[in-house]
Image 1: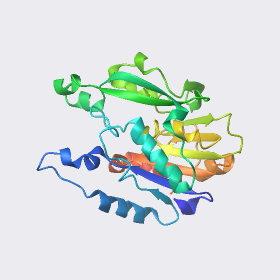
Image 2: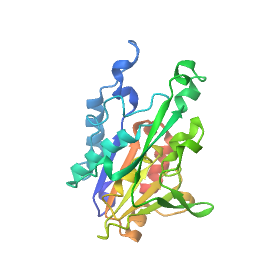
Image 3: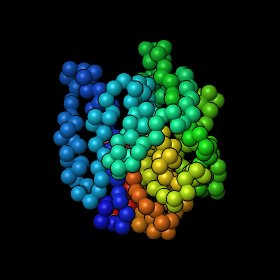
Length: 261
């Protein structure tokens, strides 16, 4: 990654909750050594990429949903905090954001379990953190350019879709610009759906935050990552992705296509 660009590149690999909550798995379940996994990934990406080890940050009851496969906004905040400290920057405190709580979330695991009653009777809630001076993300889609709320009202979303409160779900490409930062700083976040609750935090450290979903970017931008960065003068590139994406050849190919392998 780092040898393809002339700007700093940061890489964060979000572990699966089966790593984080390994002590809750059935006795005969296959367990993966998280430390070995991180060491292998770190070695693979190379020394010229800043690796964000989330092993310590993503442990606890508040970092993943029980009824859904995604991490929570608090899990995303802990990763954001570690990223900023690795960069030598000061992470924003949670009180710099408006906090919203949306009850009654029953996500993908609930659906895949056949709507298990134990899960249904004990739903998750979604905490969302909205920048106080920045409310909209300007998105580029196949249908055109649209402004969405960075944090949508989760009370208006169905129980299954409350994770869509973050940047209104997945879009090929979006921009958030903080009017209170005027230093020209910018970053590009390359992500899938796990990145959605993290990107609002970055608005407190960069004037402009570009957000690319590598699964859909070819719908609106036919070029490569290097072209995207050079055309916009982006200063930092941040990869934030869940480890489960590595199991999908289609997702790996989509990432390679954008990176320009």
